[in-house]
Amino acid sequence: KLELDENIKKHYQVFDDVLNSSNTKSKIKAIPLMEPDLSGEELFVREKEWMAMYNGKDPAVKGGRPYRLAIFPTDQLQLYVEKGREHTLQDYYNPLGFFDEVYAFNPKEPVSYFKWGINVTKSATNNISTHIRNLKIDVVRAYGAACNTAVLARVKDVPIVCSIHDTANIPLSVRKVDHLISVSQAVNYQLITKKVPPNRIFSFTNRIDLKIFRPITLTAEQKSEFEQKYPGGKYRILHIGRKTQQKGGMNLLKALPILGPDYTLFMIGGGNEAPYKSLAKSLGVEQRVYLIQSILNTDVPYWVANTDVHCTPSLWEGFGIVFIEALACEAVVVSSNIAPINEFIVDGKNGILVNDFTNATALASAIKRGTTDQELRNTIKSNARVSASPFSKFRVDRWETEIYRMILNRKRNL
Image (cartoon, rainbow, N blue to C red; front, side, top):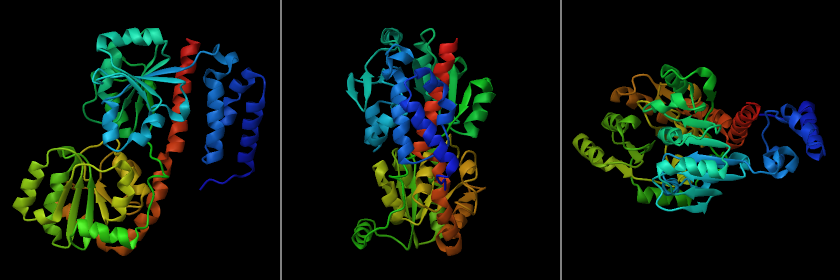
């Protein structure tokens, strides 16, 4: 845990002196002194005040013109609302309110509207570059496959930043963008194999709100309500992930008959349920499997509290935010020993990693350890939340604004 020692107090004083200074140039030069690696509500408020000054609220900085960001999401923003992630949208696309104006361009959007601090703009691909030019956009930020659209809409002297969150299906257009944001070392490796120059890649990570994702204590009424709605055995397994081959759900189903009648499986995630129902029936475990299409993202702590292990034995991942959310809730996580999962989970310390994760017997053995070895469970749970802290929204938001700041500084110095 970080504490406010004398050195940190000096940083606070520098921050105050700079904010109160009438000399804007001295404020800009003092940037390195104002960025200690801290957490806490007080610094968060002060950082936002400083960002307001830096982003054009002070006419001496850049003539008073606001900073404008254009984003290219992979999906319609309404789909994130349906996934229960509406509470994340504004800060996710504009951390710390760094940009004064944000415009979202996605040919899939049916109408134009303003919400979450974002001007969602319906526009055909061949018209987007005109919007970028007319709006005087400062930075373009694309996500995943939307990198292709951003490259097609390129405007001279407007840097394109593309985020890559998966090791599979990386668009070839990544070679044509100015900067790439990679969420893991596994993604870094894939980008480099696609001949992306390493100096274009910013190592980054995903973020979670530790105020939302936290361990909770269930009331007797909540426990009873859950048990009545989902009757089952002594131990409960939680699987969160789309119903696709990538998330390893079929392999997990095959482990259930090996584990025996004391185990019940909850599979949460969208997709075609038919193959899972068919396999469960053929294995004779259909009475111990609950297939759930979706839950609110904010309900994850409730589900973790009601289950004994969190097991999503993915075949591959770009990052795996569900694992960080589970760790923050002090879940006993059982997963595959692959990158990037093994970048933040250490076997036996804050989770259980399975080498032969497509083998049902190996999965069953790991799950059994995770449910019955109380000493191991205590160790994992005591380390879980601490290991999620580097991914806190507060830290990552500040980190992302630093990336934007560097990109804009480079643009000014060209």
